[in-house]
Length: 299
Image (cartoon, rainbow, N blue to C red):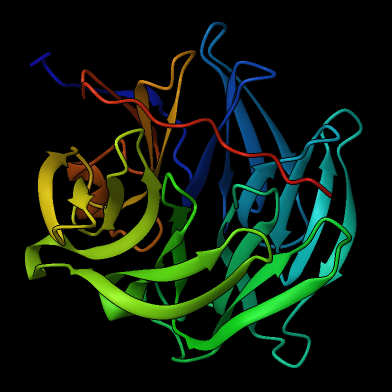
């Protein structure tokens, strides 16, 4: 076993860092600060950070096949042109719910952009229940709603054979599996795969590795856990020096580095003083497993 190394590579204090995506085209890590309302990208070679500010909270970012990025911000799916920093709306959702916003999102193996909504937080992880839904933005910019009655729509990813979609609604404390039809993008038969233990915190962002195991960032749990979805159990826990771990994604030139975003929103002064790197981004190496490259949104 190689030894696991955890380092804080980005020490900016993002309010809610989220949605880490490796952009192979640029050799950079792209991510968002939800409440900070910005999309950022970090170059590991120069250690420089660029950012684009948006008009509303931005829940997630994805690569876009035609260049630039797709974002789920406010209740709008939009295209982000990095060169001129312009944001072009592609589709709107939840128009009857002005208090809602997008949260986590990811592109499926066929190039569709999935993202879910939630009510704006009263305070961190406290929301009006059952206000969210899970949506898909198709290549032609049409939108489909999969299901509603969601509390905090969160991490998602697909099995290596593309027949299962894994999904987290945070306040259920479970990681779920749905049958997935990659031809149509339809989901069915939702089942619980794993329920988090009390000390593990709240399941947040998630990604799959090249062995088909799931990595889940545990908000307020200060860790990422590796779940075997077939066995329904945790097979590895990696603890971080901050409690508010929010999401994780593999990157680096061979996808062997796990990047973990964190948050500092909702921390009092004493808590912040104990964990001064809250809101930073961590790189975990030596896990002995690789991730799979992210798919770009086709539209």
